[in-house]
Structures are given as C-alpha cells and as structure tokens.
Image (tube, rainbow, N blue to C red; front, side, top):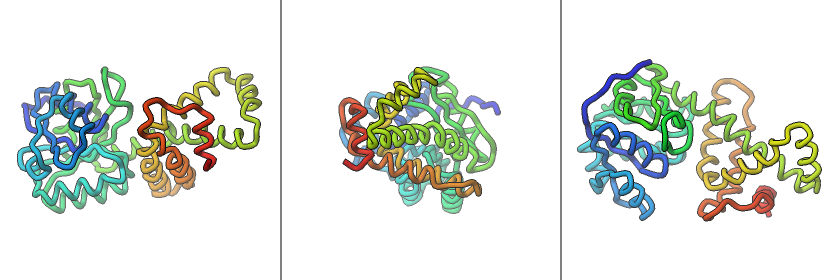
Length: 285
C-alpha cells in the first residue's frame, strides 16, 4: 500500500535506544520535530538522543502534551508499561507500538489505548538500526497506519503499511524473527550439546563436508547475538505465544528464551565472547 506525504509535526519517541534513535533520525530526515523525555534515563540514552538531534522535553507528561504521534520502541517486557504511562499522561493522539510483541498482545494494547481516547497503530521493525535504505523495515497496521507511514518517507528506514487491522504488523515481525533469531538459538544449543559430549570438532568436520560455510557462519551468528540476548529472551516468549495462539505446535521458542536468558550476562561486554565461553554459559557453567 502507498503512503502520502505529511507536513511537519511533533513526534515523540519513547525511549531512544539504538533502534529508537535510528527510527527518530528517519523522522528527523523528514523534517519533523522529534522529541524525547530524559527524566529517569541514563547517560547512554542521552548521548544517543543528542547524536540523533532529538529535542528533550524533560518528562513523558510534557512529551505527550506536545506530540501528536508517540512511538514506543522498547524491550518487549516494557511495552505495556510504556503504553500505560502515555495514557496516564492524558495523551489523545496516535500511539504507535513498534515493539516485538505478539499480535494478541498488540490487539489487547490497541483496545486499551483506543478505550482511553487515543488512536493505536501496530508496528513491527525487522532488521538492524538502519544506516542505509533497503536494510530495515517498519511494518505498520491499523486504521491510521498510512498517516504514520507518511512521516517516514525520507528514509533510510523503509516503511510498509500491511493492512488496516491491528495485529498484522506484529504477526509479520513475530513470524520473521521466529526463524531468524529462533534458528540462532537452535544453532547455539546444538553446539552446546556437542561441546558437552566432546564432539564439537567432529560435528564441525561433518558439517563442513555438507556445507563448508555453515559452522563458521553459525558460530559468528551466535557470538553476535550475545549483545542482544537480554532483549531476545522476551521476544522469544512473545513468538511462542504467537505460535500457540495460531494453534500450531509451540514450545520451541520458550526453550529459545531460556537459552537467550543464559546469555544475558554478556550484555555489556565490549566485544562478543569466544564460542567456548558462550557454550559454557549455555550449559550452565
């Protein structure tokens, strides 16, 4: 579905982590006044907001007063609290939840937001924080999705309106990440089991016979995932709920959540740990 260009408006972003700051830069590229609330946020968030050129309005209450659109980009476990904070501030504009949550949870959140007199748009981001066009996509769904999409016309974040139905954007995000991040957890736990049984090198030899790039690429995927494992744990639980809600066999992604939970300790490491250290953590060492 296409988008139409909108005039400059004030848009609030809660709270600008790496992805949120990148989303905000796309909005700024479109000429919009992008604001954030520094109250209670750490120095790292302040630095990201400054680099993205965001205007600090101090509090969430003030952000909700001046913004006509508020975007929530946060870890999945915090999504509902952010929505409630926005509603408690008396916001009556358009609230965009762009978090990795199940479509069922998105629909429930939409009912909450619209019941309080605001509009709701469901969003799902696929990809890394965008630096160039064609690398990262924001899917949107809901009655006001085209209006929100128009704010992103300048890029580099790509935007696509999926439908007018809340939940569809989240469903795309969940099903995509079910494979991309779920398969990384599967590779990690498979390597860990082989390590425990003392056959990791033999497994690598056999894999190299079938697919010479698989083992090395898989190990690198696992190492890169450690920095975001603390976010992926909650996302895996949302994916598991999505699959269960569809009536498909569930449980795999609940186990993947446990695997990512064992890797949370590496969140603040300046460099990804080596594979042996990761496998030891997965085995509970």
